[in-house]
Amino acid sequence: MHFPATQPRQSLYYDYQVFPHFHSQEAIHTDEKTVTVVGAGPIGMTTALLLAKQGVKVILLSSELQLSEGSRALVYTKRSMEILQAAGAAEKIMSKALPWTHGNSIYKGKVAFRMESPTNENDQFEPLNNLQQNWLEHFLLETIKENDNIEVRWGNKVVDHVQQNDEVTLTIQTPEGEYTHTSKWVVAADGGRSPIRERMKLWMEGASYEGRFVIADIRIKLDYPTERLAYFSPDWNPGNTILMHREPDSIWRFDYQLDTSVTPEEALKPENLHKAVQDQLKMIGQDHLEWEMDWSTVYSARALTLDNYVHNRIIFVGDAAHLLPIFGVRGANTGFQDAQDLAWKLAGVVNGWAPEKLLESYTYDRVGAAREIIAEAGKSTRFMAPPTDGFKLLRDAVLSLSLEHEFVRPLYHWRTSRPHAYTHSPLNSQFDDNSKMAEQTENGALIPNVKFADGSYLYDSISGKFTVLALTENGQISAQLVAEVAQLKADKVPVQLVALAIDGQQVSGADLTLTISPDLAENRFFASAGTVYLVRPGHHINGRWLSYSENALTKTFQQFANVENGVAA
Image 1 (cartoon, helix red, strand yellow):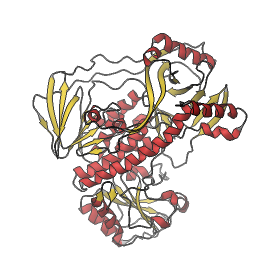
Image 2 (cartoon, helix red, strand yellow):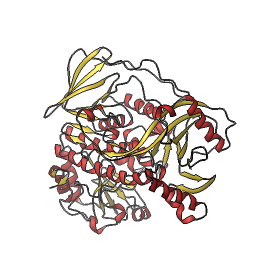
Image 3 (cartoon, helix red, strand yellow):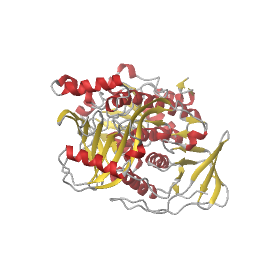
Image 4 (cartoon, helix red, strand yellow):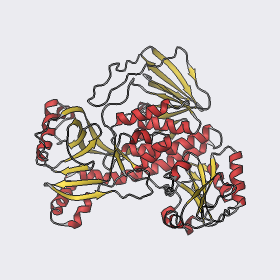
């Protein structure tokens, strides 16, 4: 039997609730329209919400009886918030989160480099947003409770599984004993130590680094703005790095690098934690302030990924699929992008409008994203936590030179996580004008978001379904395009036709007409009247035409049935 903790976790700022466990006396067999998600962390919850938005029923399994402990995933990018908005949870999250735009790299008491994340008047969210993971999960769970398509089963630990050709049988332990649960599809969102991945003997590729960091959440009144503070080689921890982040509820997070001679067990002793925090406060002239420790842990920097995320009826997302270092806020933020890409593709298969082959593009698109992130994260990690004497020498040279020479200071840049562009996706249209159009809106890139005069945003109108965006004037739109969209709808494809009217004139035949200015058409979409974009349910461009050509849309969707080994046949 499985006996998860029944006492609420202790926290200085969050009141944990213990939920009743689920148990079944009989074996459970779900229907063909149900997906089982193993793991109720941020990625599992978000996957469940996005699937439910597509009309899929979800069983969400949590081995614990309560939400996770501590800040953990803390910083959420604009892109993550856009995905969480599509999931229905962003408004709740942003009622608590702390937005920010700047980061400071500090050496010898001087700001050697100040990073500013770019913003645009059409952005729906700030570039970066701080919120402890327990609060994030709290708001995701609130949203889940509003959705009849999701059932959460607490205290359900998956201890074994058997995969048949078209189903997976999970063996689940609870405080009352064991039962089996059979599902047509299982999403493994069971974290960095994924038991499902381990049982399948799947190995990750990439690199692990020697650098270990302590996370310490403390409650303290520090009168600093919400910005990332990175201190390089502080006097109390020479050769290493410490990061500081403001959190809601007067909590501050310290991430400090351990000397290689210090074990995690030694570092987490209360007296050693206290000394490290006090030394950092002394260095910044705040050691006179009272503070309390809330939570602490140790983590290692890794940059690893599976080479395939889809194994018949078991599909991996988030940390179960890849392990990424936190530098550049890549961990959970990459997982949210996994969840969004998987949700519409798996929903297409479950709902019957897409072939199972479509799921091969999930591996192609998201493994490609992970490998791109690993390459970038490696650069950040080698600077933040040099893995060899050579990299340490290079990092120390940059630190020293930065005091007097401005040209080296940009080397401090932490290469913030950014949305992956599916430039080479097998789903991108082979029947469009992509090569003739502006690079900024190429196939695979995100369609630019737009803020309309009434305060609404384009993404709110196009999330969760395919959208054919047609730029129009005088209410004119291709009759052939209208007919093809209608046929796709008849084939149960979740698609809509949205007119972006440059002159504001309503368009007959469109599901929705939105008004944009000529400046927005030119500067956001690099387009004029007659231009057409096909946008995936996850906001990425899937095809584009300077002037629509007959059957191009239909032929693009036919590609989805011809994906072989992640490549369009």
